[in-house]
Amino acid sequence: MNYSADIKKLERHFIPEDFVVTDWEHLEGYFKDLLEREISSVTDLQSWLRDMSELEAVVGEDASWRQIRMTCDTENPSLEEAFTHFVLHIQPHIQPYADKLNRKLIDSPFLKELDQEKYFTYIRSVKKSIDLFREENIPLQAELSVAAQQFGVISGKMTVQVNGQEYTLQQAAKFLESHDRSLREQVYRKVMERRFQDKEALNDLYTQLVEKRNQVALNAGFANYRDYKFVDMGRFDYTKEDCFRFHDAVKQHVLPLVAMIQENKKKKLGLDTLRPWDTEAEPEGIQPLRPFQSSEELIEKTVACFEELRPFFADCLRKMKSIGHLDLDSRKGKAPGGYNCPLAESGAPFIFMNAAGQMHDVTTMIHEGGHAVHSFLAHPLELSSFKEYPMEIAEVASMAMELFSMDYWGAFLDNKEELTRAKEYQFERVISIFPWIATIDKFQHWVYEHPHHTLEERGDAWMRILEEFSSHMIDWSGLEEYRRYSWQRQLHLFEVPFYYIEYGIAQLGAIGLWMQFRENKEAALDNYMKALSLGGTKKLPELFEAAGLKFDLSAQHIQHLMSFIKREWEEVINN
Image 1 (cartoon, one colour):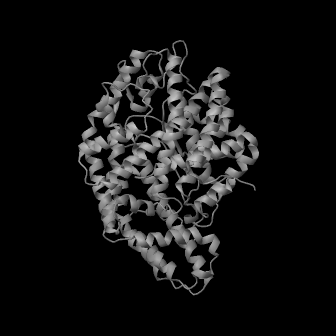
Image 2 (image 1 turned 180 degrees about the vertical axis):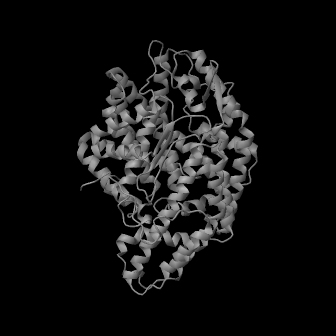
Image 3 (image 1 turned 90 degrees about the horizontal axis):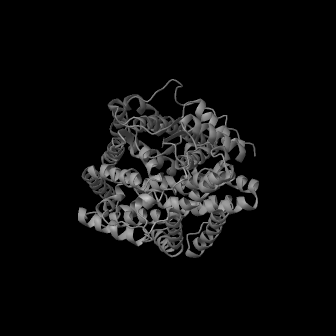
């Protein structure tokens, strides 16, 4: 199949080309038109669906841009106001119409004449939305959307002074790679202390979010927010019990590998005791990897890497660069983290990240680049709803791209020794992320099963779960209070609750694709692109199957994949 990154903004047929979302008064007429329109045939129904899809794309993209602009500059009150205006004064009016339109679709006598295979996942999602809709949750969901963004506002202000110069926390992280252990400790403590200053603000914010989320769940007839969210996120193909089995498999089959990695690090550094500021360091005489100097160089080198892997991937990034859909530098006032934001009408997504010159930034850029490729591949699908793919396959897109790209990291690094170190670092990340995923996921299960917990109970639960998924190779003595609040650095807990187990599921898929890649590069990339081009038109296990993968969270499957990744890691460190 031929794929093109020469993506075009969707033509409008229902909404005027010059229409811009400003307020509800000017938007409501289009929703009324759809609600009142007579549907007399399956052809009418298909036309109605296309018009509804167009409206969703226009409104969805407007909302996305408001959020993008605000995260790029959290200190600009007008950008925050524009986002808040949409969430509080436009979105709440849309939700009742969306529910009525969903019901109109499901009640249509012509629904059964649609291609049932093609529309299966869409209709399933619509029925789920009808089941969950409650009028009384509209203001609560608006309040939650605004409150969740405060995490970025609070975190975006965090900076530390190192050697008389101000750094964001993302920029300061590069000092943790230094061979100077006293400098590493000094910077680590400064970063932790700066986070510690806002611990009460973040605790209060999280308490508000948990209370409101719990009320949303109760209003919708659920026992707790976890059970509500599993339905809301469309987790049709696995259960909370599957998550618990995943947690147990990580303890059994991944933690021993993490202990090996940390023991190897301790030996390399010649240390008797490994401290948290040692985990990213290199021995004296070995300079930290500095794969790029500027965001311009980062994008240039990523394009070169993607070009060698498959030219279509590079074309996607070139297109985004040409239209200004990249914001890569870390700076004060910018929200933390990184994301790829699909833009339903424009087609070409937006990548946001906080690059500071480290190898970690390269893998973040490649990760978000994988998401971007997914956006490009799904854009030609007929309806906006078809492009709303499960997050588990979305993260396969990004995590597999990290692994695929490793053979082409010569674009970033000059010599074999540096490439070996970079690959070793990548293997360590792939393995070490599993216990953290299990920790964050299990913590969320506890939080929402106990929504009225005290702050003391929250801290105790976090420490208990954190210990459960720790290798005990790192000495945390004297840092217990910092560690007790370490959950606060995880953006997902505040902004996208329960979105984290997806990374673990996807990492399993990514390793599976990389096993294919080792056997036959072109076939693996074909499978990858085939699965991503399906968007959300198939069930999650079917999307995995299209990629040549098995959707399996069992301990046996995880053990099989960990054995493979361990062999690959040992081959790198022993050569």
